Amino acid sequence: MEKLKVKINKQRFIGVGYVISASFCYGTMPAITQLAFISGLSIETLLAIRFPLGLLITWGYIFKKKLNYKLNKSEHLFVMSLGILYIGFAICTNQSYLYLPGAIASILVFLYISIVVALEIVIGREKLNPTKIICVIMSMGGLILVIGNPFGQGGLSIVGILLALCGGVLYAIYVTGLGAGTSENLNPIIIIGYV
Image (cartoon, rainbow, N blue to C red; front, top):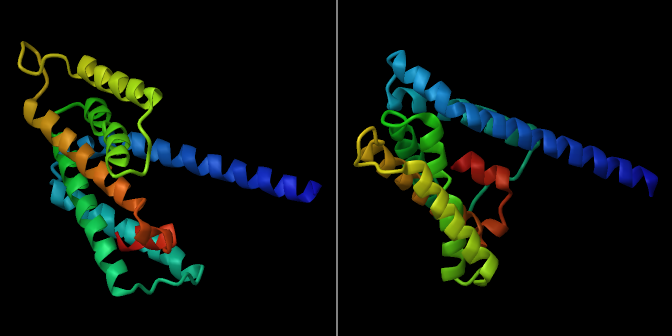
């Protein structure tokens, strides 16, 4: 019993480490992307470097662990749909970095959390309750405070705001799709590999 507790604690510690690492990497992405733009890289070039690198790492892991990566026709259509959504998200989000500071664009993209809550309620996966309503209202209020008046003096670029919001909506649909019944039978690493 004691060995099991130690193993669970070790796995939790490793999991927390992965979450912190992923959060750090995601948090630095806008700054690195904007530096790449300043140095003359286009969005297409940047994504053409980033996605194949992720592909090599992910599929290297899949092959090393000998995971079953074969999909049936409906699963192929499912991951292709997710891939299209993710590409749209990546393009919109990276385009928004051309018009907005990285922190502002990231905050706007994080609207996806509220959209996921709304989508989950609409499709019946979640129940509407006062806590969710308050959280979504507070989230929207925070976004309004961050954006301020985009049309006023010194305001933010409306194009950048729309691109970031579009990225957030596409990512929300992507995340909601990940919760679909088709994904329950697939290893999440396999989904990531195909997306």
